[in-house]
Amino acid sequence: MALDYRKSTEEAKPEVPTVSVIRCAAGQVLQPVKGIVIPREDIPDDTFASGVLGDGVGIRPKDGKVVAPFDGRISSVADSRHAVCIEANGMEVLIHVGVDTVNMQGEGFTCLVKEGDEVKTGQTLIVFDRDKIKAAGYSDTVAVLLMNSGDLEGVECGAR
Figure 1: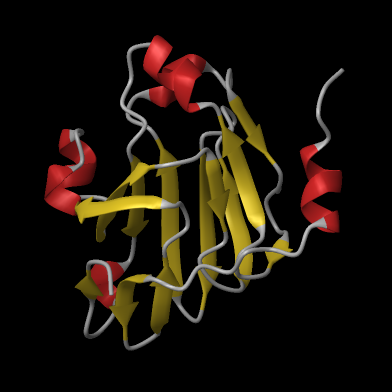
Figure 2: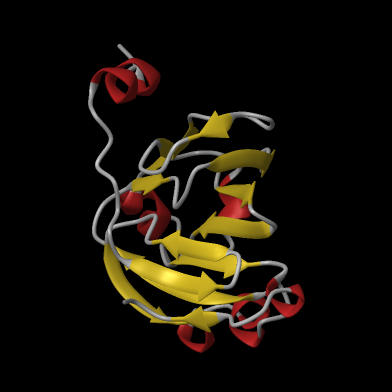
């Protein structure tokens, strides 16, 4: 019997994150995954670490749940259910679970939102199986990137 994550998420009051990981003039991005926040440069992927997709942070997760880092709209969802983009106040944020996890073709990932959904801070977006990611030989580090950081003023990254 499959678990219905949507139902359990709707019934439970969301646990709103309190740690800010990205700040700028447009607003702040709260920590969407429980775990240890690391500098973007330490994400074990050259594309993320270089900042070509935007400034941000990595998170070494302690559990397998991604929540909305602010009230916003889902602008895209990866077909493989391992990544989402969320927008609000001119900020465009990518939350990408794991490194090279696109190769898992959705195995071990449950995405609870679709493009166009309006979401509230703390609402569960993705549930993922850390053990499956590690068994497949991938890092489960979550990249949280402000994709348009070059267009926004006063961008600061790091847990606060």
